[in-house]
Image 1 (cartoon, rainbow, N blue to C red):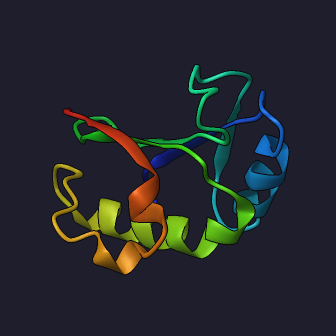
Image 2: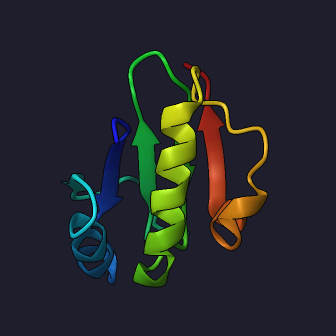
Length: 99
């Protein structure tokens, strides 16, 4: 999977999420992503693609994060048009930043 995943480890629960995801994918650990009102925060980005920021993510969403990355990798510009397969994760989206 090519999307760069970063997890905020500054808030409580961040290290647990990063550890759960690191068993499945490469994860960058950020000390603060300035989304403290919605811990734990996770971002996905790749050059030339839209970037995504999710909040209120916990280790139980690891399968959905992996599904999101598959959709993201398959989308030429990173635009996910049908997020229904993401179940709970789709409701955690804070924002999508254009490429």
